[in-house]
Length: 118
Image (tube, rainbow, N blue to C red; front, side, top):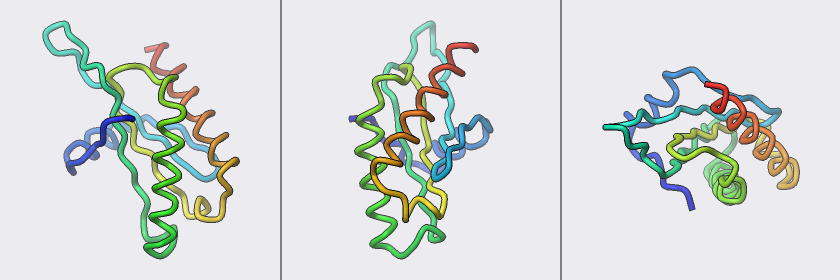
């Protein structure tokens, strides 16, 4: 399981970088954490952003549960030391699990490719 982004500052640090990959129902914002004293911080961290535009509390919580499962399923393709914010578009509430699975997989692969090029 991925570690969680918890504080407002952690979310802002990722979103301020303005690096993102968009799919039909999701947006993945990402940031590689800086290397400290020549040592990279190994864990991957995940934050979820599901606004009220997605639906009521029950719907938002269902979307978040799906995102946690999908992120855990596809995290192995991500580089070590990355922070991810997985943001739901309003259409994510109506998307089926298989569709979200494909979108998260494609987005995480794109993030991996982009971070390798840097």
